[in-house]
Structures are given as structure tokens and as C-alpha cells.
Length: 295
Image (cartoon, rainbow, N blue to C red; front, side):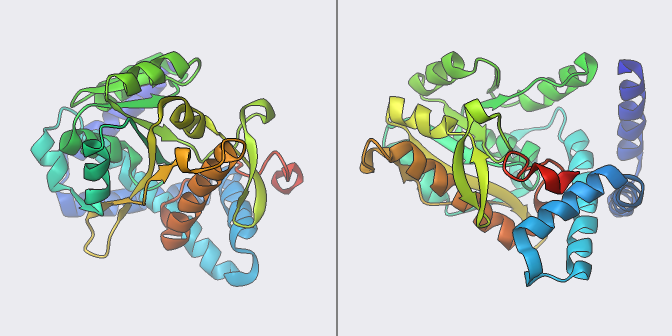
């Protein structure tokens, strides 16, 4: 299977390298539309999640449009991932603008550890590269791909600009070390978790499990949690938006983990409502409490 993945990847790599920019846009749209019509399994999950989150506030046609654009966007993100291999800081930063960057700069100047809470939203592979290119060393928590060959390619791209990868399984030691060494740590917190690993929060007015990892690490290290997300703005530029920091030490200790985690979920929900077609709707976000909806 690894060989098939590699053949597909390098075929796509070759196409990306030879096509001019205007043709690449059409090519990514074509891939997205084909996937939308062929991938019935994940399309059903996407539409189920949209029904859960937006209920009757959107029509069926509006939800289908969001779903179709989601496929288009993630085809575009995949192509951009290839283009960003062996890149430079200047090239990456020319693609991105920052909104409320003073929030991150003030956090850096506070001399406190920083946890960047984000989600599978927008071009998140570009997100970590841009943060590292602009602000310095970053460590990100993630899981290795099942395909070793593809994981090698992914790691090479993700570790540019002094980015450190921390394996999700048993990440605590690596995260604590990174925070101690004044490296900003990025954690994606938006997916469903096992019951033992998550706490119940409200997400789009529905019950959901949410990892408290960022909150726990913040409580242990006095870190600031900064929710931040990347999306395509009205000028067709990738924009990184920083929310106000979550300072867990300001909460009652007995409620701090839950409050900080709920605030992370709220920030994620807010950005999804702003740009719903840039969220990764393909996973079963509400599976723990509403498993039957995915049947």
C-alpha cells in the first residue's frame, strides 16, 4: 500500500510542479468536486455534522454548498502542502497575514510558556510553518501516519524552521520539556476522544467530548493558552487570527480545567461559524454522545 501512496503522491507532486497557478486552481477544484461525488461515506459524515451543528438554521442546499466547498478547500490545502516543501521563511510569510498578532507578541514578552490551541481548520499545515517562521521555535503534537513512507514526507515538511514534532501517544514528557525550554506548543483539540481522555463540554449546543490536554499542561506550567486559527480572508490571503489568551490561573482551581477547556471549544465553534467550509467535517465529532446519527 505504501508504494501506491508514493506513486499517487509523486504523480500529484509532478502535476503541481508543471501547472501554472491559474491551472492549479482549476485542478484543485476538479479534485474536490470529484471527491465530493465519489466519496459517499465521508460526505454522509460531513452532512450529518452540519445537521448537528446548524440544524434548521441552514437549508439543505446551503449545507450541500458548504460540504462541496469543504472538499474543494481540502484539495487546495493538499496542493499547497506540496508547494510548501523545502520552502523558505520569506515564501511562507508572503502567503500569510496575522490578525491580532500583538496578543501573541505580548504573550512572548510575558516570559510565560505558551500553548497554541488550534483545530483541523483551514490550511493548518501552513499554520504551524507560518507561526515558526514569524515567531520562532514551535513544538507541535501529532500522530504519525500509518504509512511510513508518507509519514516521512509529512515529517520533512512539518519540521521546517525549527519545528519539533511530539508524538501524540505519550506526549506529556515532550510537551513539558518544550514548554520549559520556551518553545510554543501547538495542540489540535477539536476531535472526538476516548471517554477516558476527554471531558464533557458544550459544542454547538450539543454534548461532546473534548481533550483537556492544553488545560492540564497550562495548569501545570502556568502557561497561557492562545486559541488561534488560519483561514482564507476576503482578499484570498491566508490569515491567522489570534483570540484573547486563556489564563487558567484566574479560575478557581476546582473548575479551572473545565472552564479553560470550554473556552477552547467556544473559540473553535466561533471560527467554524465564521468559515464553516474550512473545517474538517470528515470525522465523527459527536460520536460519543450521539453515535446513532452516524449509522
